[in-house]
Image 1 (cartoon, rainbow, N blue to C red):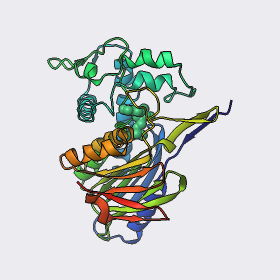
Image 2 (tube, rainbow, N blue to C red):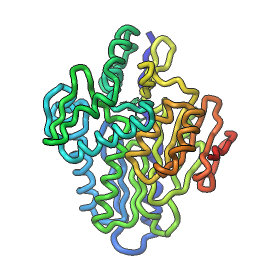
Image 3 (cartoon, rainbow, N blue to C red):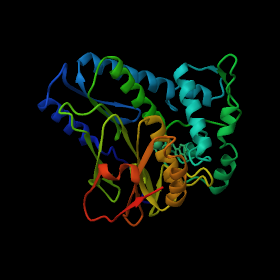
Image 4 (cartoon, helix red, strand yellow):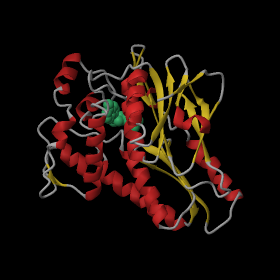
Length: 346
Ligand code: AMP
Ligand code: MG
């Protein structure tokens, strides 16, 4: 049996580069400070034009959120909810569950907050990855339905109790939500320039100190040491979902971590990566996963109808290496390498 396991923290260098730019282009109040940390099972890189205490507060906020949202930490609210304890959830946990349910609904379950039984059966949150029996997958699919999560919140007293078998996975949204909260915190501390990378999910605050936009590179899913292009953003997030980020190989077949909730198997939608660009990390993180599951035709239709309401654009790489860019971001995107590019218009 040939078995391989991979995690790729793409775009990590971007924050470092931007940090140097902040250092050398310094003006205004504060100075460029940077911290690299490991949390939520990933490398995080926070670069702020501010104070060391801003980094301390950001780091604490990330640890606190991880303690609430982790599926593996026995003390976390999500762990206790998944073990069918009746939990009085914190405001943050309630907020993210509600948002995840809304996004599950509007994507018709392409992204589904209740996918955890399937993700767990594949072993994606533990050390032992494996291909589950088809019978097992079909049995567990009966529990995948975000409506059962929506119905579990007791609005009167804020208690939360899931039905037997139903379990929550916030893996497709938690880092985006956390990034939003960190940016809010930095803003409230008076920070005007920051770029943070939470495992390759990039959140930007303002512009660089030289008033130019941040330039974020997007990994080539076929060669993760290179890039398909760069996108210029300010006050926006750039969040990517891709099969290359977390996968294992068994008997010559690659199995990745983005599950199609309609089959229980890794999504086989003809795409290699989907990058969302928008104002909300929570929204973009959830939608990057949902778009990956939908595939090009369905995501194009979804984006044409809902892209404005959710303030998102997308950069997609398909199986043939063609890059698709939605019209709202095309002028800010610079293609690299010899990929062909097509613009998705409404
Ligand atoms: P992302 O990297 O943001 O696309 O999120 C992928 C993670 O979200 C996986 O590691 C799973 O924990 C979880 N996940 C996988 N497929 C889905 C899905 N269809 N809906 C919701 N969460 C998912
Ligand atoms: Mg996501």
